[in-house]
Length: 140
Image (tube, rainbow, N blue to C red; front, side):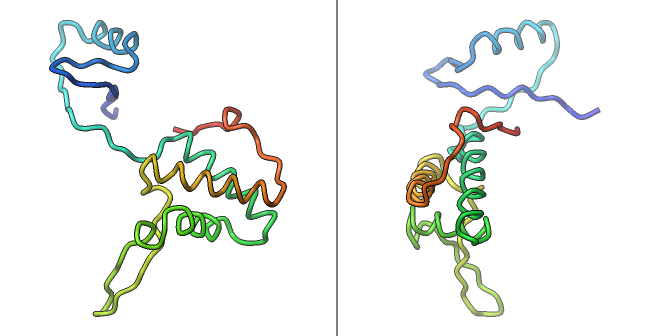
């Protein structure tokens, strides 16, 4: 059976203040009297699951309307929204340097927001009907 970890995000000021205090307190109650392992790190600033889900939905709709692949739409959105320097990584193969467009999975929250804004503008230009962001199912 795999280890089950409870993950909590919050703020530190000498004490931990969870964003979900009720769930945090329930986890504490469930573990009372047991030995526990706690790992603490600074929260990653990667794009959120709902950003990711909506980004893929919009990319798919733009792809259908434009005839471009979803991957090409996402690459274009990354380059247009955050620029060539921030939107690429360099790889060296056999002494030659190549640029690769960053994956949307590697985006930070603020970068993903810019990419989403670019895609929403493109979808509006193409007069696409998109689902409301709250209607998009997040797979976690």
